[in-house]
Length: 166
Figure 1 (cartoon, helix red, strand yellow):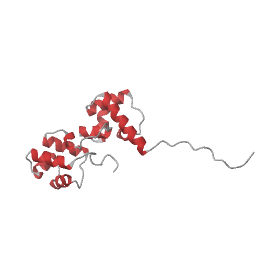
Figure 2 (tube, one colour):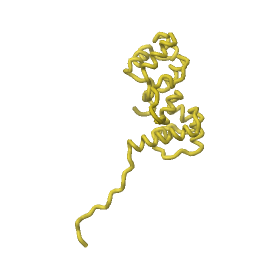
Figure 3 (cartoon, helix red, strand yellow):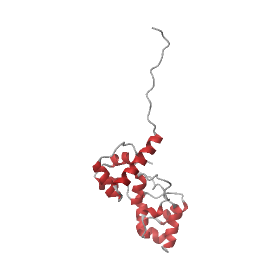
C-alpha cells in the first residue's frame, strides 16, 4: 500500500485485546475513546485488518499506554526507521513535518533509499522520534540494509565478445 496509508508494521491484535481487557473497556468504549468505529476494533482484534500508525497512537492514548505496547517485540537488532515511527505513533507526514522535511524525502529515508543522513536531519528525526542520534543512525542503517537486500546493486556487465578476431 502506498502513500503512507498502510497499516502499522508489527501491530499485534492480541496485545490490543489484552490491553482493552486490562483497561476494563468494551470494544464500544474503546472505539468511542479512540474516535473509531466499533467494527474496526473487532476487525483489528481478530487480525483481519491492521490500523494505521496514527490510529495505533489514538488507541494507545485511549488505553493510557505507549503505542509500542500494541506492537510485536522486535527480534535482534532490526529496529528500522519505520518501526521507530510506528512506536512514536506518527504518520510519515507527521514525522516529516515535525522534522522540517518533505514527506517524499522522509519516505525515501525510511525505506532506506537514502544512503546517508545529514547531521541536521539526524538530529531533527531523533528529536521527533524521541531517540538518541546513535539510535536514529542505527535504525537508518537497518533500513538501508533491508533496502539493499531487496534491491541489490547492479554489477556492471562485461563487454560482449563477438568472437571476431582482429
